[in-house]
Length: 433
Length: 143
Image (cartoon, rainbow over all chains, first blue to last red):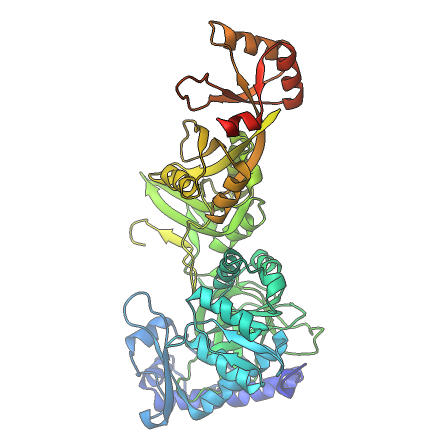
């Protein structure tokens, strides 16, 4: 089912809507946000210079530091009385980045999530358990509003308290699970420990995962563990929260809601705009946000855009699974490696579990990498040689696929840290990191 | 005539063995033999207990990766050269020993020895034919 006719417009119709709304957004930013006024003036631009999508590339980028520098409300384009909600990013270092919503922004957000969950297969018959943390983080409230909008029964469970989550899931007959993929895997593990087989004893048929990147291998693990159909969705608080894009059940990438966001792909080093299919940093310009208009926001996420029509009938552009982030790329002795690539290798090795941690440090002048994994298959206990071979297999695959020589540590099951939100996979102990 | 042995994965760090044996003690399981060889970061503990099936269940429930497999237990004569004789017999019949360990000794009892070899059934046959006392699981449970 397709929620809105605005997901099936022709390319011309999209362009027309985008150009009109882009112009409105630029005017609002210029006249209401001093930061943008001076940015545009520095670039020698008047709002009236931005009329077509081709003009977009003239605009300066916005980065996360611009939000921090204008903490808390400096980039808002509306007076405080028009703001009805605040959210903020997790902000692991320093001040969080604050975002605000007007009444219309909340309506837009709710509509976008309704489209997104419908695309993933949710209907009014579903019982949806929201296992994102409720609070300043946008994940839980975003999904909550949209799920209610399509008529699903929402359980505002929040994250953590996993055993209770499983109990409620069983007793209420939850059919759709909403959370981060890493927490989804952890919940399945806890359920089995409680003697509950998520596949047989629970009714969860859909998994809507987001809030962190994931790989195809992780999707397979989630599908197998729960017996559900997993889709991924994408967003970030600066842009609106979840609801920027999501996968339909054809799994051809994530459909971007183009009547509300204009995507571009750039070379992150030069800023040059790249063509369809080319891989680079995703830039998003939200074009309907009243409280916090952002021009050409640098997401730091690496992906590509695909305009071919999807079998689902939607005509919106699709973004590929995030390959990595411009800021989580590890440079190990000159080799560029994304943690997602390491994950892909690990997930395809029999005998080890889905949880892992990557440690990077310096030994002398050399970069060293250690990867902690958990042994889950007792068949490796027949001889020590088998265990050693497993270790060598993992090392060997990492070497052939990624060209890195990692030390692999096998751990007992359930000894690596589990996350209830976004998983922290990489610990970089090198200086200046 | 084979007996059941438990193999358990452990990391080489403080407290792992105590956790393992603690789980067995809590469930009134008695360890008859234990072996763990010098390892770097991780290793395999081999155990013979009085009730191996229950022990496996207990350990899995505690989150250990554990497996039951079969080994030979023999009771060598208490005489010089008896072990040497056994090794010679196995070697002559082209049987390779992966590892051996001895049982926990008690007063007035001869030490049993556990063997993991590549051809288990053949080894039992040959040892028995050569007059070596191959111990069965009832004997271990009874002691």
